[in-house]
View 1 (cartoon, rainbow, N blue to C red):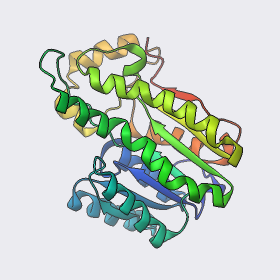
View 2 (view 1 turned 120 degrees about the vertical axis):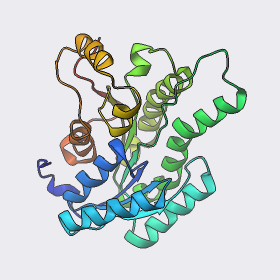
View 3 (view 1 turned 90 degrees about the horizontal axis):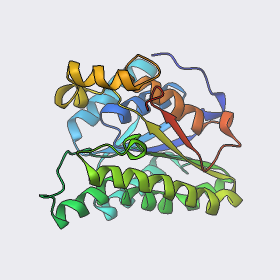
Length: 254
């Protein structure tokens, strides 16, 4: 996939959570193509290493991968510190990692709820907290928090995920207000139903896709690359005066 060139991104350092597969892997690839020094965390070592090999072969720019469970904040902070030691100060943060596990309301335990929040919301705050000193020192930064249009539509079947994704919009607005004085921006990137391999394997039946497309103004499914285009824009100087916003990329689903 070829993206427009954002020259201001070249040689900047980006930290991406959940970069080993799906939308996150698309982000890693897209930023690496721009000459960004990309570090990412994901759970599994082998897929992360394979992605680094692929991208290095494609671009000559090898990402830096750290296997990490983002629910473990100590491990997440260590991964950020390793990135800083490896690449230098981080000016782009993409909080992408999430888990859209389906569940009903009646049989969801307190532990299940805490696990969902610790995966889908809590890391967004603490990565920003850990990287903020770098951005303040640099005098600029872009925080991109991945939400979901499920929180806007109020979709059923995963209330904890919908709740966390709604919280991301509020968190992003609060971050933007607080860090703007340091020339740091924070925006939410809100995808619709993106056709990742996980979605195709678990839920994207022909009937479900048809129903989704009926609700979209644009009658085309959404690709990982569609979301990566918007992430590059929000990270770059092309969006220099955009902060505290929620950029919805869902084909106009209503």
